[in-house]
Length: 98
Length: 169
Length: 341
Image (cartoon, rainbow over all chains, first blue to last red):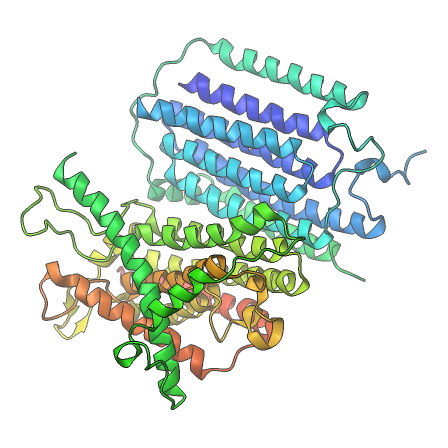
């Protein structure tokens, strides 16, 4: 049973990683990062259940708070970038390229 | 028996919803599909005897973080995919970096599955006690008190950072 | 198919029908009380004393034409009232409304008068309250009209701001009662001190009760916090473009949210179904009386107080109510430690 949960979370993590690699829209990239964090949460809770300790749930608590903080700051950065150039494509922010 | 069927049902919803999140062009639909995926994950947490984490997932992720995403998408009137690439070809099928990225993600997935299932077979979960909210709270305030306090400072810093960054000046 | 299972299914259906009829009753009560407060008659033509007015309203709403603006996003436009109504009904599922009963000995095991008995019930109520923001925000966005979008964004910003004080007031109740299950919290409020004052939580934390009711009124977008849907300001806010049954669903969701907030306040602060002079098994009568009193309070507030302007409303939520609820939590924690409750 643990293996099935781990495979599921591996699939979810891969989907999130594919979203970050492939999509060229800043908001979708942030959403894919959230998918990856959720896959990690699922792994923690599954292991916590398999090993019979509550520590899995406690680490999930911290991961969720960190994900919330990171989403807030990430979205603030997206808003600032959008105000400069009316675009959400990460390839269009090339001013620092040499 | 019933819990196996529920696991496959919730797992299927989570995987399909996540696939649609990265495949949708409209950001509003992506956010709503991700909320559906979070709901399915919350069901999986209930199956894993973690009701507290399940409800916190709905309150924090689906009820707060996704509302934030939705607000930003609506206020920016976020455009759909960029126009540097050809609009008519779906993002996951475009040639060049995107196809390579998709292949890379697939290879990554295969490697993860292989690594995680190498540890031998695992049967059913041992019938353990459902850790109550009281025991989680006790552990949070005794063993993990330092990360708890540091996390609250982290949230304060993130809040200040978000306000400062998004200010119009 | 044990008798208990049949009784539970019957209970679920009964709660559903009762919520629907409570919305209809609230329509009549609101109009009649509003009229009496404004020294006029109110509905009196349809049926004796106007009692069939809600029926006439429902029939009218069913026969209206269902409009959809051409530029509206069809999927989200249809989904938004469904989300609102579903979350409103779902929040009532974990609220108990009476003591466990055996239905005059027909059942062998006592049936809890609660659709789902979860031992993290308070958190579930809070979770579903935070999901109901989506109905409003999607309604505002998908209508593709400026009044709707502004009303939807303002309304949802108001709801998520007041959720914080709502949650902290609930947390103070948890400190005193040591359990997350609503049934256990109610059972902890039975009995009385010195045989005179009932052991209700409202006497232990009056400030918490006031904060909870204020945040509840703001959460359900009722006056004096109903700026986003005020008729003089934004036409009708997020439900401007809706008509017929979709509008009826938003209407229904608002009234059922009111009933849920009143029911949860009754269970957590006013002792639930415990009361003098009646045996435990008839406790639901006391529950109905208390919920009715709180709903009358809601209607009374609407037609007495002027509404807050939007920036005054947000300032009140963040700068007054939130610090007050944090102080309430601190004082309650200090009291629990010192008095060893």
